[in-house]
Image 1 (tube, rainbow, N blue to C red):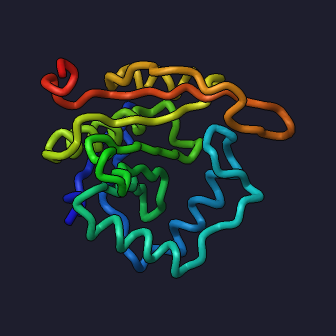
Image 2 (cartoon, rainbow, N blue to C red):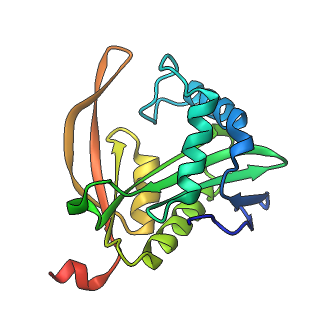
Image 3 (cartoon, rainbow, N blue to C red):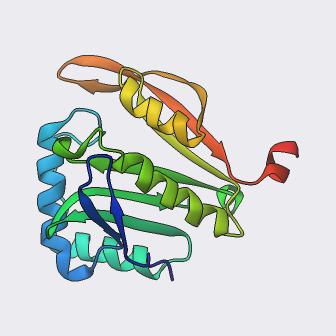
Amino acid sequence: MSVFTPKSVSLKDGSAVLLRSPREDEAQALIDYLKAVRAETDGIMSDPDDQLPTLEEERQWVHTGNQSDHGLHLLAEHEGQVIALSDILQPKFTRQRHMAGLGISIRSLWCDRGLGSLMINELVSWARSNSELEMLTLSVFADNPRAQAVYRKVGFQDDGLLPRRAKVDGKYRDMIVMSLWLKEAAVAS
């Protein structure tokens, strides 16, 4: 079971934030968070017009994440409000079990305070303790240098460019695929 032990952290500006796993009874708060973050940024794949998950779908997402040994959901909370959400998910296919995808979103008011780096470092630490995982992967918009800098700071390296991978407001946007090898032996083989 992958439930994150709650941990209080201080951001660069001194703000206190609680990192923890989401709970099933927070499904509506998580949907509200997703709706708000989609309206604030075009730096994530989900568009404000995309259908939101149902309450039951969101409860199931939390339940599955908290029961699985193949991933971890991590949220950041400040004064009872969800301000960031991240996760690691392993593919279901045996041939890809050595890797997992990482995703993160942060409310715009909380960007540039070190929260993204803190959360990613916690996810990387969890991934390093997972005996199956050798690599984390992610994709980021090529025109989002701030996010790329955070990923590189943590140790992710560019793997390649995916041209015209998304279309936002009628304009194509490229994606960069990045990876982080978790175990030195895996890199050598």
